[in-house]
Amino acid sequence: QVQFVESGGGLVQPGGSLRLSCVASGSILSTYVSGWYRQAPGAQRERIAMFRSGGTTDYAESVKGRFTISRDNAKNTLYLQMDSLKPEDTAVYYCNAVRINNSLFPWGQGTQVTVSS
Image 1 (tube, rainbow, N blue to C red):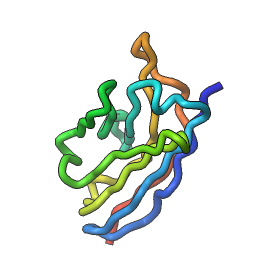
Image 2 (cartoon, rainbow, N blue to C red):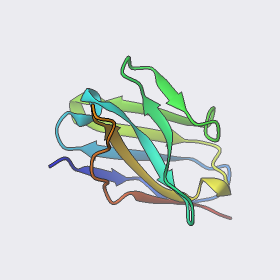
Image 3 (cartoon, helix red, strand yellow):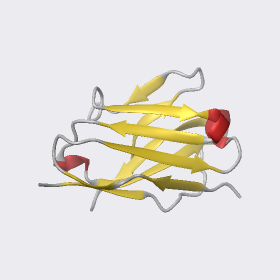
Image 4 (tube, one colour):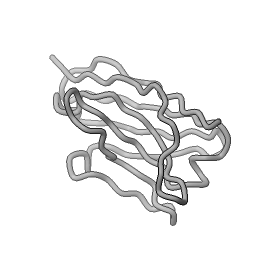
């Protein structure tokens, strides 16, 4: 069964940076369209950064220019570099990949990011 293990979250002040990591079982992250998602309190989960099938990246407008997605296929690991963090970035962050039938794999436990002074 595919598993995702996210890490790297924490408490950071506005304007600060964090780097999240997601380790997946097998080569899921390099085989399928993969990306980072987040869910803020009381909100729906949203995709914020992704690798498209051609290897190009795409970002939600809310994080464009501040977040950078990257990956290490040899380590089955996806990263999210988050800079210039804002309080509204507070959320639980998850990684996942999109299967051919457009469904997602089971979610991991996520990693909490809290941006507060």
